[in-house]
Image 1 (cartoon, rainbow, N blue to C red):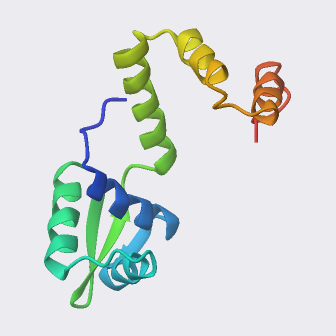
Image 2 (image 1 turned 90 degrees about the horizontal axis):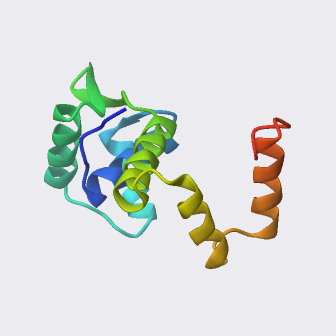
Length: 127
């Protein structure tokens, strides 16, 4: 799956929508940003939402005078697409090279490695 690239701020907005069950009103987004200590102006939220709509990540449904933003792309689909893009760009599609780098730099815990072994053996979802 090839997705358009989104900015760090657009991703932050998407994470809020995903965390809210894939749907969020402006007030939900503003509240989440405030709680994170990173409030944005109304114009910033509206601009970023519009960009995400244009890129096919969100759609907006009218509820009275308010828009409800609905994720079109799931968080899992986005993560998978980004992982595939990263793997191709950096490791030329060589997943073994990526996993080796993660192990060599101690970025995978022993528990992570055991979970992956279980997953690869078909014994679960790795979680």
